[in-house]
Length: 371
Length: 94
Image (cartoon, rainbow over all chains, first blue to last red; front, side, top):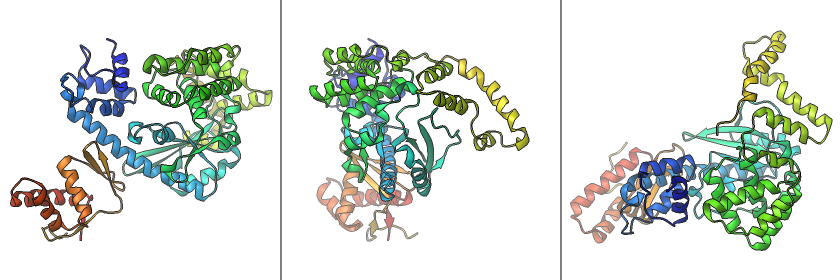
């Protein structure tokens, strides 16, 4: 039996034994690679009362218990940081919405520690970005060394270390970077108007469930080369499973309006393949049927080099001025960023530093992503 | 730091949180990141510490009533447990 298939069934609670050739440690390692180690440990520890002694929990209960203890401890630290973050935005009256794992952990998972995450994604209105950065600075977050892009990137990155845990915040003013995905999904006002509260996080709010589903479907394709990563597919599974038929039909219509029908169909189909997600064929057909000509569909299947993504961005950009801005942001980042990566370069030599950066970075743009 | 004895009082520092987990529990100091996994007995002792407002003697008396073990042995185990948590910043003697 395929190990990945077994892992999906184990998380679903549909199998209670290890397949031949897979040890408990290997099962846990595979689950960790896919971000579902806490989900596996949680499911497997419930098997220990069962007579089946081939379950991983029966063979390695301590390893599974330790996985959960660590997940609980890390989650407690992350939750404390998250409350501080969302309270600070609320106190300063800068509207923000949590998206992806940080929100789903509290809205769709049985217990938040089952949804591990390495960062917190927060969406704000583009025009409030300076204020938002001020709020982050106030509570100790420092911006990573990165160019000041507006079009080439949809987010800025901040980190802070507390109690030995690095806490990262991705501050978005659009949902994903590639221009092929720009559009109605980036309308912050519309996202806020449909948003919902996250009661266990105080003042925090997150996007509506069907917006969350669209973001989950799009993110894995737009930013991660359509990679099969079980945690993201489990997010999609939980969101789609909690939706009614009418919700999913409305979702299909919105995905099509955002020109993300094919990408959404792809992600839902993968979730269904892995976790038997209850998505009716009609919904997938509706998504596929209206997907003709979607530039985002080019990202399905992955394998895109940076140069392919940049080329898709240039084609998808709405105006020539936007295309020029894209090219400038990629090739000529601001002097402050250049000085941070070439700290010993005198100001008069900065033009040479730009040339050096372009020449040195060129091979990376033509490299195929690891499959 | 005063030695922790049966008549000591302890309190849970503000930065320490307790999360139950299927019969076990995790104690975490949010300030230091240090955490402890508690088994079922440790979890019960922690609950008694909170219930008895930090009185080690009251916790011990409750344990004598609840557990089928020699009182001297329970005292020894309880003090070792509390001292370890105190040393890790998960409990404070006062």
